[in-house]
Amino acid sequence: MPDTPAAAPAPPPSKPRSAGLWIGACYSPHLGKEILAAAELFDHLVIIDAPRQNDPYFPALREHVALPVHDEHGQLADPFSDRATTLLRQLAEVCNAPWVAERVQCLRTVDGKYSLDCVFPPLYTEEMRERYAANAVALGSAIGRPLLLENVPSAFTLPKSTLTEGRFMTRLCEATRAGVVLNLPHVWVSAELKGEDPYGVLHEYPLDRVSVISTGGVADDAELGGPWMAPVPPSDEMMEFTQYAVDCCRGVRAVTLDARGPSLEARLLVGAVTQLRERLSR
Image 1 (cartoon, rainbow, N blue to C red):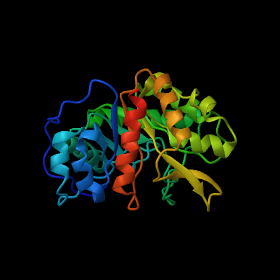
Image 2 (image 1 turned 60 degrees about the vertical axis):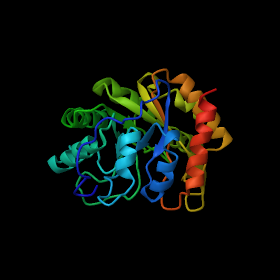
Image 3 (image 1 turned 90 degrees about the vertical axis):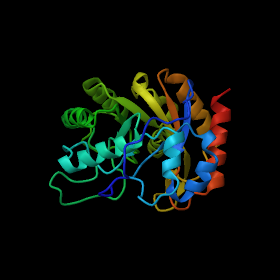
Image 4 (image 1 turned 135 degrees about the vertical axis):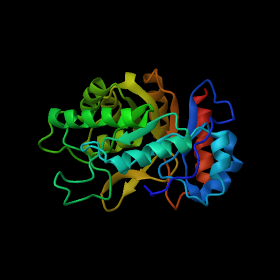
């Protein structure tokens, strides 16, 4: 996360939010012009990193759409530093974020010697759940906004895990009263790589705690030798899975297209969000 977030806290969006299901996407600054031109399509834009000071489109978007914050730089297995917490709180204030989300991921070893440059699951044990729960409660209190927890993909089961990811998330929510960002491509990839049914795996999660659903594209990864998330439109199968999840999660408030990266094109983003709107408004 950059040291200095954008200037001043934003007022609530001037555009009235829909009373129904919000449909949105992750904010890609390189597509700011095109996103602003199609702003009526987006109820919300997820902010991953603090917007650049010279982003010419962010101030106008801030007036028209809700801007939740999804931070991917922390590790809830450890307490957030005062500096990291302050930066996250400032970013949430700048965006007037209706919620803040953190991934239930592992980025660093306990001794801090090694770091990973991709999402990796923790050991799914009761001991780890207690550590995550304590840190999540402290972080939620410090940022003063609803904290949601997002599941991560797991290509394999770590030998010392004693809980499934879904059960781990359920127990974590019981301990923290946090909501859930249910990332469907992550569920799909984890199930596919383990030879499991994604629909069955879905029901291991605390669906009654899901506030936000993330959906997106999955494609074969040559290096992994299997499926992985990709900046491509959701397939028909993923669209069906998304509709199914929305029907199962009665408290869901928003659906986010999780597609980003420098290769993402405006036509793909706008087309996929339009497709989501058409599918989920039936």
